[in-house]
Length: 358
Image (cartoon, rainbow, N blue to C red; front, top):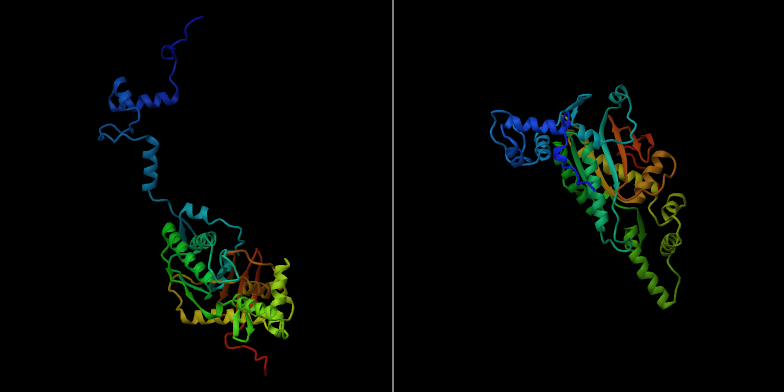
């Protein structure tokens, strides 16, 4: 059996392309076979240039790409990088340029549900996953903002809504640094108009989660003593939570069945609008960008808001899901988008609130 042929002694009528380029680089450096062996992984340099540090070619090219600024793309008066265009791709159907000019949007409102919470029997705040969801939502919101925008970040007073707003703030800060947007973003603050729908109890109007704790203590006392009739407010709360324990949808029951001790859905919608009107009055419109409001709140009022806007119940919002409201100039109409549907609505005036007791 013959010995294997030494691959170095195989005659080639021409060198492979990669080998020819390698030899060309080495010849420019002026080195022979010994220099080629010593500088096998050295970065190539032009003739007459100083000796470059020994680092792989791929690493040098990677650093050159990172140091070079990305080319800007201009479209409709806005300049952005191709990386930002790739990261902001979505399924939103945009109106034609002429139509958008006539819409005259003066304020954009993002109503966002809180992240995954540790539980609803107590106001214990978000889980780590819920915090990460809110952080990602803030990062995504920052992609849509432009330099010169003024963003007001508000939330409901519960721990889960407040922590969601805080994580949205951190995620938005990261996103603004990444995309290079100069945006005025306020720190999160609770506002009373964004609270969850309430339930009347002997202690007054309480959040539906807070009323559950009172409900549990009262039910335990009545069952232990086994005397007296249950109060009517307790019967109604018991009906609401037993619907949830049975696997049904208690929010749908609240939206469709009159409940004597629960805050009506229409009142929640008007309360939200009253808060948005107040926030818009307090903030001056920016000179170059757009005025925006980011509101972290709860699923019940959000679902009532979407049902009012679209004329049907679109279902329970997911954690950190968003309802977008684009208020037109004059404040009389707005576009409400939720789950791939956009509806133009008439905005309830801030000074018009029916007196149902009259």
